[in-house]
Amino acid sequence: MKQYLEAGQIVGTHGIRGEVKLNPWSDGADFLADIPVFYWRDKPYAVESARVHKNVLLLKLAGISSVQQAEAMRGAVLLIDRADKPLCEDKCFQQDLIGLPVFDLRLGRNLGTLKEVLRLPASDVFAIRREGTEDLLIPARDPFLVEADPASGLIRVRTIPGMGDEEDGR
Image (spheres, rainbow, N blue to C red):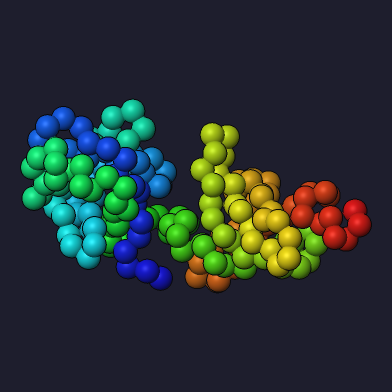
């Protein structure tokens, strides 16, 4: 597993003292609000202050003290050290799932590999890369998601008829 995980992207500045707006790629801005250090270009940036504003995290990073310095970070993807955000035993980082095979319990076969997790308003959706055809989209929740366990190296889902089995003539 990777030690450093993508936390989100800087989408703008806030104020004139060097604060940046981080669009989170996680459960939300609250999830990242207590991270003590973010990383960019292999350099650590200690967090001087962090607060949630609407759907973004406003960050004041050590060493970034002007709007010009903050503007230079626009578009940057910030990383966190996974050790700074321990998870409960039954939770995992989505980035640990990317690339894992997705097995369908109903069809009894592998559907492809997890390409990305789409964060949609109703729920997260798994985009599954399949050979020679379009990606398959499966909601990442009950009753479709049975198990997502990076330790076992497999994601188990249960599709419904018409979802992912077009090639079987159903």
